[in-house]
Length: 363
Image (spheres, rainbow, N blue to C red):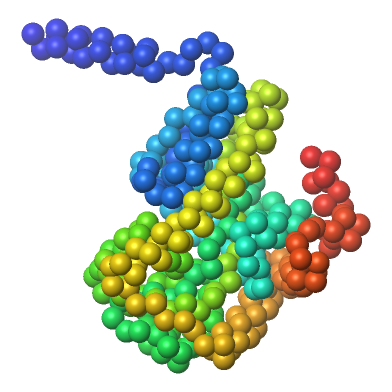
């Protein structure tokens, strides 16, 4: 009887695998995300999945794996390189090793106001500086992500001035750690999906986050005060396919995924922007107190931020990276955009890494 049961189990497993086997002429790509299917990022991912499957005529099928079933928030790039999924949501700003320039450049966006401008600036920097592309070896980027300008959300203490941040343990992105330390806070960097539990336990006093997290990550349940100081936000590569899997695709399949890049980026931006509005409404309905920052405090913060980012750029020299050149180029492009009304990359002959820029254009 035991042997018969084992045989039946093997038959059932074989039948299950046969049902899952793709039809001839259909390529199946797995997509992994640490977020739940209901998260705004995942809703944007589903828009992309539907677009790819529709525009491929069913010849490309995307199989999603949500809620960190395959990838984590802080080692997603390493996991993707090792083949745990074909395509994944990646977070280079949270990676534990490498990616120094990608993390640092995300703090060079002071003065950039929109998600479209954030993405445009990242593309300009990536095009001009090969060190950014070097940190993405083994991966082929499918979408770049910007975000809403964050503020300061705290559990029990309202913030009215920068001096009120002193002594608070705050979750913050890496580009803000130096500024917050200068202000006497105790900042830590951790993936956003770990913040709720740390706020609930009182391990964190607050978090640097945009308003959409009040609803999307349920932060309104564990924090009550939101200080609306405008903190710059950068862009970074956020969806990628492993280079090994990319090379197995046909030219037509590669072309379709390349064409899907602006679709994915627009879907992410739309979800971020609508989530901010929904988060503001949700927070107000659930007792979150919103406080505007004074013009004086905003100017003081901007000065501290830009000074710290110049220092951060200089520190990249320890890795053999000319971060100051990247920082100055970013500021030049931002200044030009303020005068022209839009952010555009100059021709390759005007970019800092001329030969690298030309190589990138050929590709």
